[in-house]
Image (cartoon, rainbow, N blue to C red; front, side, top):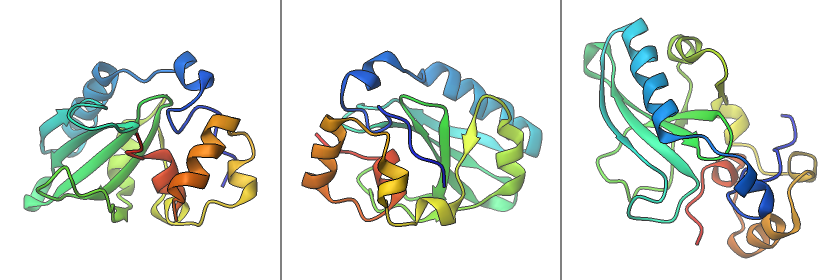
Length: 153
């Protein structure tokens, strides 16, 4: 996996220079789901009721399945996770959905489940700023996914 960009955690000055709007994320969700059939159940903005680094959407897919789409609030990075009924479920079970990933297209990068489940080694973290590194030392995330999609305060 490539190194994560500085600011991806939402901490430090670099995070303030980058932003992925909930509006562009929402529009992308509606366009993607239209390509494969299904509906957008809900879209939530980062920090709505909790301190977190990501927007999220729940999509109803064909055949009654639902999937969570997580969007980093600072870079156009997406991940898919099993849908749960409670937003307080921060233990994501990352999944792949190649058809949906393809439907998102540019500028979105959909991270694969195996990348997100990797332990965040030095190579992946080498571009992060000092404030981000301090947060990593405190929170001790056990996966790349929990670095990119976090709810640290």
